[in-house]
Amino acid sequence: MTSPVIVALDFPDEQSALSLVEQLTPSLCRLKVGKELFTRLGPAFVEKLVGKGFDVFLDLKFHDIPNTVAAACDAAADLGVWMVNLHASGGRKMMETARERLEGKSHRPKLIAVTILTSLGEADIHEVGFSGTPGENVLRLAALAESSGLDGVVCSPLEAAAIREQADRDFLLVTPGVRPASAALDDQKRVMTPADAMAAGSSYLVIGRPVTAESDPLGALKEINRSLERE
Ligand code: C5P
Image 1: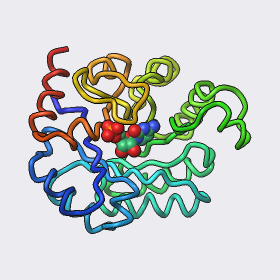
Image 2: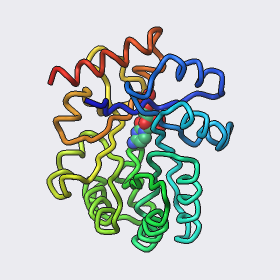
Image 3: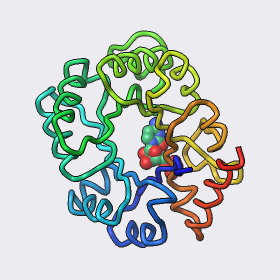
Image 4: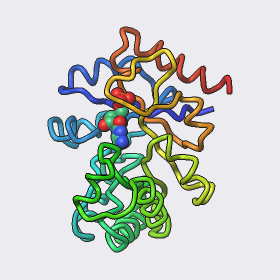
């Protein structure tokens, strides 16, 4: 089976990121490039990873007017990335315009949405004008993303089962907050093991420090992949 693991390349510079990447292969994992690394190293670094054969998730969480987000997604497609994301709270028009723009591309990345950031609690979302609980808003925004034609959402593995219940079978659930039973929690508070997250309905697992901070990252990744094959 192809591994569902996406390794989060949360590094401050190219050398440390590449010294990890050089130990990995595209058959063992995909790679996620976020705002820190992209802002430091730019598109050339993403193209380098794509050139090495990796599926790259460009995690820039676009949120702007429809035309600007669609143009940014178009640029991401030209970099050859496998997945790109935006904020569902940017609205239906923004999501539909981005999806339509990607449909015209010869290489079409998967387009997924962030619903409610897991760093926000109930008081935080009320302060910015949302009502209800974070969980209710996650389900509402996931439904909006799906009906706007997006391929999936980023969500906590603890939200995966509820979203899976309301969504189509092929709607992608991309879940960070995953920790092998033996790994440190770091700053993650509510976690699931890789196997439990997959059982809860995850499609892909975003895993950073349990691989990147290990003295033997390749061994740690292989052990995670083995734990999934055992299921
Ligand atoms: O090191 P760790 O496995 O905690 O890394 C998780 C990755 O997923 C990081 O890149 C983090 O920014 C991202 N992420 C997260 N929780 C979210 C959204 C994204 O941990 N709710």
